[in-house]
Image (cartoon, rainbow, N blue to C red; front, side, top):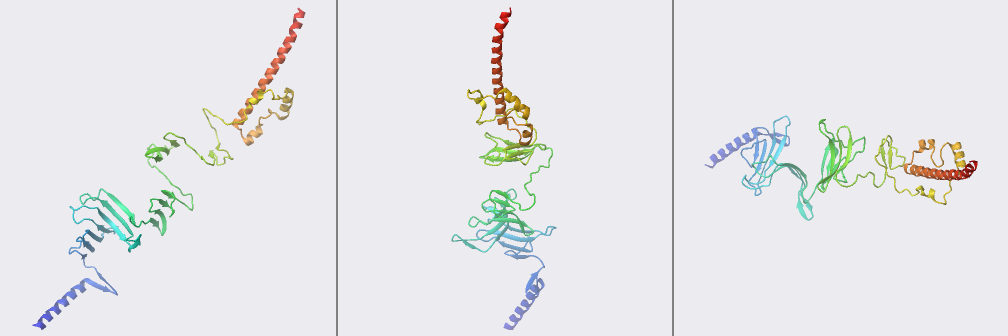
Length: 348
């Protein structure tokens, strides 16, 4: 009886081996199978490689699938919870973990996840897709690159660097070559404006915008618009301010201009100690230089410009001097008139 059982077992092993050999093929030190789907933890694999572990205490199911499409995409899916009636949270996506690392005395797994954050089986599409590096125990930065060149770096503290791995602010854009910058473009010509808006404490404080023709810088709350408060100058129509706080190359119009803190206002002309230039000396000066004393010549104005505050003070000084000349001439006229009256009375 024993030889018969041995014979039957040998026949079964032979046919099983032949069956396995027909499905799994050796290739050097490797083995491959291309006759259908492979299932681990399931007898009905839905993809070339399908792994399920839904009987785990925490519950998760995973599937690795190469879909037959132009994109030839790969998907990995994981769903938390044992059933639709059990609470989540749930996630669907990629989850890559490196070997465990001891951090602050605890074992943690650095990971990179790309998943859909959903709250129910019934509505898994109306939530948020999340890309996350690291975890609360071991934060990681996230970098994006093209052709082995890093182009954007997301720090674990929330700062974003474009062109730099060490952003110093919430958004840090750095370029080492060319005239690169930030471009804000509104392709809709009918839209009123394209703007860069600034908020603080929940309220809008300022805006820089263009309406297609003009550029505006507006302060939208109480306060002032300050340019170069600490140092530097402002040029309008010119890059050379010649050291002035405001340089304008072109015409300007004002409804009012106030010049303050002028320390040498010429009220001193009316002091008794002021020496008024004799008219003969003034005439000689004008004949020689062709302009009033202390008033810049045409060549000086052309070369150095005109100081508004100083010019106003000088013009006022000349008006005050002219007033003194008129007062002096009036006294002489009155004196002559007083001398002529007795002569006229004698003639009668």
